[in-house]
Image (cartoon, rainbow, N blue to C red):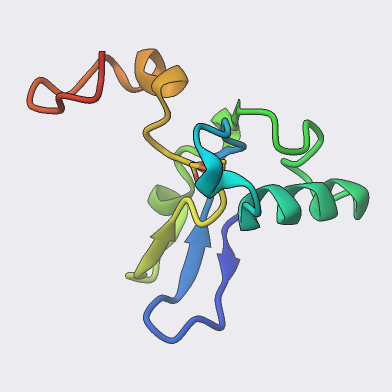
Length: 100
Ligand code: SF4
């Protein structure tokens, strides 16, 4: 289930995927990793794999089930367009040079 948010520019967060891969020194203090480890320790559903890249199929249609128009923060925790997810999304967008 998506979570309501206290962030002023959004109403809810929607994380159909969790986890990521560290790709540079800029990832050293990754917020998402720290949160994923914490949420796993708390037993939060969806974080059973911690920060390991995971698609959560049950969450994909959450916005479709919501009756109220909602502004979502999509994937507040992971990288929605991580290369490993590309097959699940049906392939690379043709105009994205970093996707192959
Ligand atoms: S979420 Fe961002 S900072 Fe964290 S590992 Fe992925 S790319 Fe790096």
